[in-house]
Length: 79
Image (cartoon, rainbow, N blue to C red; front, side, top):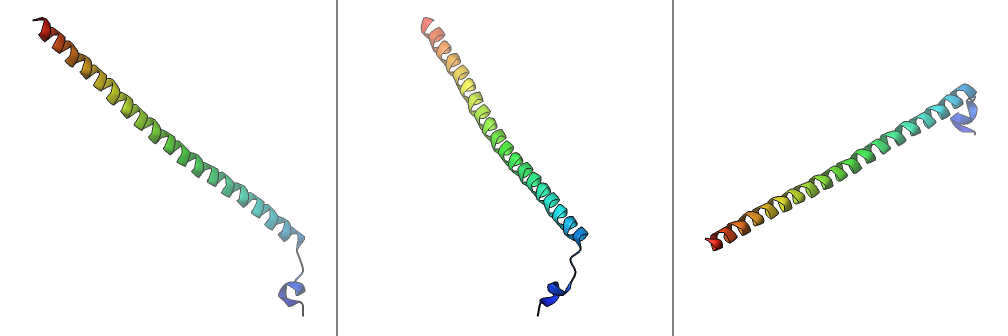
């Protein structure tokens, strides 16, 4: 007993089409995976850059506030 596949004739065109379809699908899946990974990495980088910008803004504002307060104390000490 050969089974159902053993009795069926193999169509070379169908085999070639199946192999081409599989190769094409693997390319599409690979490209989709790369796009998803790229979006995830870019999102992570954007989030990190935003946090760094927020911290830098707080440092600049804090430094400016410190200078204003220090200058006010100097002016009050001179008077």
